[in-house]
Image (cartoon, rainbow, N blue to C red):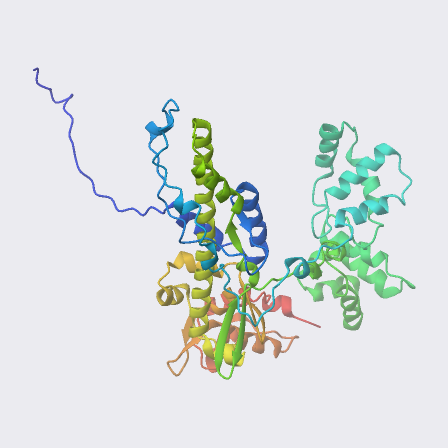
Length: 503
């Protein structure tokens, strides 16, 4: 045998790597944990449509098959490639799939009996009203437009965002009309139709920016357009940048107006709606419902938690599918076609059982996490006082439950709990900590509350700078750096001192 030279020689080495692989069920559990209660029904309905072996129970008496279904039916690749002889599937054990002991298995119901069943159709009603788009299209009927110009108007209305603004370039709308509807137009014609739509209700609709939106509303104010209205329009047209940055002195010098005149103008402008689209049907905040995932009540110092009943659907295996397996087992002639059907049925039953287990795991994980939060923040759940909240991070609850931090994060995301003191996002209970002058750990929520109190009590003619806020907070007994104060101020959507200034 010829020897290998240096160029042809190959070296072998062993490398040890650490990795983490999740099972398909673990991956699916991570996914389903993120789904809020409001969307869980849709997720379950999709599974019910895809798997006929899974059914939704109709009453308390209908129970879910769980541990009685076992994996005792396994085939090899060779079994699927056989020629269909009658002894091909003779070793199938179907007893575990056609067990009649289902009545002994309780349904996966975990909600507290003190809370009534919640009908999602009642919690999130379907309104018999037009959408925001339809509301505006209905107003197009008031315009004298031919079919071509009507389609251009429809395209404009369909291009509005949720705030009611037209933020697309008119040339882009013209391109869309040319490519999609074979309508040749130009920005000038679109502008002409746009002006007509801007006369629709609510006032300010179809503006291209905030400046135009406010001016459109001012022009629609009923009654005599007095000097203040005209002055407000003039300020927004010529000094919008200075007005938005509250450089009031520049405006006064330029227009030679008094402080009282400027105050009157500001009083008019602040009453306008910067988001006219929010007034349209379908865009109103009133249409957004928060469906709590948990209910918490305190009775004589004891705190009880329960899941929303929508988190505990009555799922069960299909009786029809088990009956088909019973018929197959009772039969004498078992050809290849029947056996392939049995294989399909078995797979669907396995999938249904797997899904039911998944829902049960979701319920258990949700309740374990919520109970850990309640145990740690018990003082708050008894009093409802924000100052009783203790600093708590994801790792705090992960350590108490034994779950991974990523699991706690998924549970806390988009989940809500209804208490005697209101409905809160689970994220509300998580906060960082800081040390006060007495060496005690306090939640940053307490610091934010202090900051809000200070800002609300400041002299609006001379609002406090971040340096001054830092000094006052330090005098209150909290150690905070200036950059931390600035960060918290931004988190609370508190503008800088210059933008908080009032006349």
